[in-house]
Amino acid sequence: MLEEWIVRVQEREFGPANFATLREWREDGRLLAQNPVRKSDGQDWITAGEIPDLFDVPESPSADEGIVRPGKMVTFSQIIVATCRIYGCGFKQFFALSLLIGIPSLALQASLAFVDFSEKNAPVGRTPLASAVAVVALVITLVSWPIFIAGLQLISGEVLDGRTISLREVLRRAIQFWPRTARLSALVYGSFVFWTFIPFVTILSLVSGGDVSLFALALAILILGLQVYMTARLFVNFMFWQQSAVLANREGVNALIESRELARSQPTAPRLQRPLYRGAIVASLWLLLLLALSAGVELPFLLFRMRGVTTVEQASALVQTFLSATTPDSITLVTYVVSMLVHALLRPLLGIAFVVLYFDAKAGLPAGSAQD
Image 1 (spheres, rainbow, N blue to C red):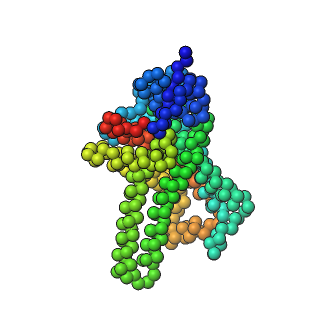
Image 2 (cartoon, rainbow, N blue to C red; image 1 turned 135 degrees about the horizontal axis):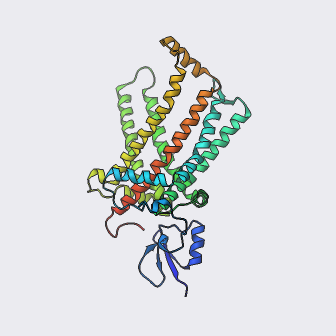
């Protein structure tokens, strides 16, 4: 008699299903290696990835190097090492996936540089091609972003399990998650934009003008404090939404609930061992690295432009010429390309680090309280 299995997804059980059905669910993206399963006549739960030959992808070199799903991390060095090793093992897939966002973003940035803006701030395409490329590139970027998010989680999860996965398979499975990640992306990023843009505009309206009253200044400071507070709360609540939506295969509200609970877990642990503080520090370090490398990329091109400039008047004239240019020169376009490549290299690192932190946070939950 063929073995049949029960699959648990979001605390609901499906099945019994035979091996062929499990393979079909895996191909459709409905069954992930992390999903709990048990035999229909048994009580012991395992992960779907432990079923022999179900996820029969070639083993990666990382399997011999000890790249396995981490338990509870103790130091930041372990988190950083795990992140770098995962990135190294799946570098080709990560970089190619990042270019899925980087190339359309580069096309958007370059095409906008050829678009002129009238005095009324109405965009007027210097050529129909520039305007068309800008619109198409923007649409492709927005459509590709949820695929990038899902694909990043899938590659990280496979590498953590000691397996490799082709880019084609990543894209096929990531597309299955597109509706879910697109909805959550709109909610998450829309919330950040709302609580950043609206208070900023309000503060500008209060402090702009000739005379600013003491009441207006105090109100602006109060709004600024509210903005910082809300942004911090959003960061905490949404810290693990990508991992919950893809790796835990949870739908919208459930993904956000798990994200919030994991971020706020371990309240009695030392601060540097809490997911909340670790996530904030990792994000800050990544941002500093991105800014430093971006500045390092821009500096050589800036120095090249400044060659021969010896006076303040010459520097001012150079800046004015650069600002009044109607089309970008070759140096500007090369800067765009190099900057895009730097961002494409660094973009996956933050997502990988949060995958490590996600499993770290789940491993730190009390026994019996971890969400399947």
